[in-house]
Image 1 (cartoon, rainbow, N blue to C red):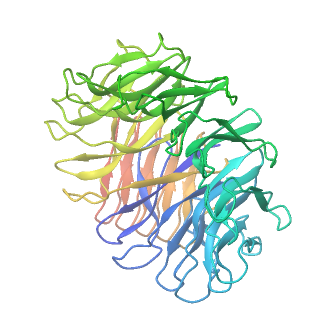
Image 2 (tube, rainbow, N blue to C red; image 1 turned 180 degrees about the vertical axis):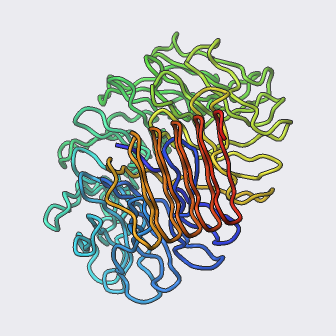
Length: 534
């Protein structure tokens, strides 16, 4: 099904608010001004659930509460006012397991506890008051695993420990008190990884320091994998990523600094891959990304700086992939995300000439190159916040003339372009990508005389917005989009589209393909995009 990209941006009028972009990166429109005025809706990252994106926002009247959007203006609304009045429940850490989204929320009666929602008011409720009364159990590190929720919480008797939930009161329980007594084990679940029927993570049991642990969802099956660095200091495993039948991570070993390790979930199968930077300094490997039969990451080596590395899981197969910034200075390659086809990854790096810009690699030295110098000169465009949507990657980039705005790439220089200049001029709209929502095709029956958000299908559509201030997106196909009276935004998408603004102040964005744009009466903005446009 087609996807819509949901983001927070500031157009200079509304403050940071919710916007929507079509999946082809041909245009962006304001989805809803949650908190009217320049303050913005204080939207916080959320979680996808079916055809919804759930998130926290503050409309200025009910405080920060749970909201939802299906990519339309009318479908963007509060889910539940958990704490009536202006205080808000401050939903945090949203994670979806199946059809249920879990989160932590604060109420005067129960404190900070675990909640769940299916995207409806009646389906939003407290899962369990883990620490009874107004004191907080402070659920954190929420992760989906094996159809259940793993998280950390403090019931007031055992410190912050490992918990598990199936979404019911009875099925929400302490998995194991890893550090007995009031000493917390502080499991790092968001930095962990699933491997077969197990979940690997780091925790401290009070005597071994922070080390590698695993759980199979039972108390007996929650055990220390290996005491990598014996003693109270611990090896502090970080950034666990599954690669094939093992998990890779960084850890501090005996006589080494932080280096690249691997584990199959057993003590014997947990070993150092390679000591890249000899001595106690360590290479500090991070940003692991599986890419085909290899895994790329960044690491530091004396004389090279922090650069792009690759591994096949063996010591000899762990090597420098590209010295992007030759010499001892670092390119600081980071933010690796795989393109939809999985054969290449884009990332940010600084070669010492262009500043931090957008790069691409296919896992080979020859296939690692600057993708586009978005902001010419030495300052760089500072690409960040990458979001993969099918075969495209959306991200934020900064130019001297337009500031920080929304960009998109298909992995080619020509296909790397700005989606929209939402706040014209140097300040920029500072977009923050939240996620995507899937929309049904064909679209729901449509236009009314009021304000509509109408989404087409991948095929050829004819959509008439009638009266009102409408947002119409054609998606794929050769579309006919008619704004009608009102201030309309028409997004053609791909294909040979015809965009007719009608009366009112309209924005017509043709997108890719040979398009016909006719503004009609009113002060209109017409942007043809790629293709032979009329």
